[in-house]
Length: 162
Image 1: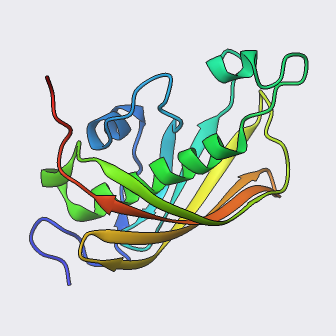
Image 2: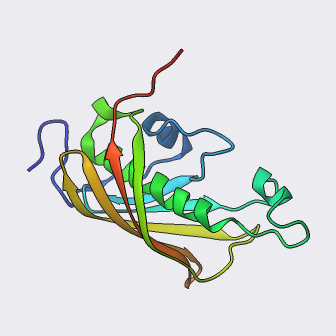
């Protein structure tokens, strides 16, 4: 059950634009790999969007003449979508908190992601207990599955500033 600051599980939450994403998670360019979250059901699922552009720094080396988004960065984009799901579901008092990766399981890279593609990052929360969250994610380009994985994360405090 939700509290006054947390919604009931399954409640449809507002979409989150880039400014909202940057309020919720501390990632910044060049490691912010999420442009918008277009669907959020509290404590259940979210859908993020990543517009892949040729100017992103990793394309210079992966691979010259045949740019492909590194698969692990696709999983990172899913994890950032999951972090927004977790923060949005948990309420404004945890905005800016870190959500640390704990594990990645069953990762499959099925289709390359290239500049000009739009990644649809679908994540589902499968378990939450004591601040530890388990998710399943699928990244799609159109109808094609590009990447899928299960992963875990832990909600931590806000990052330390020197």
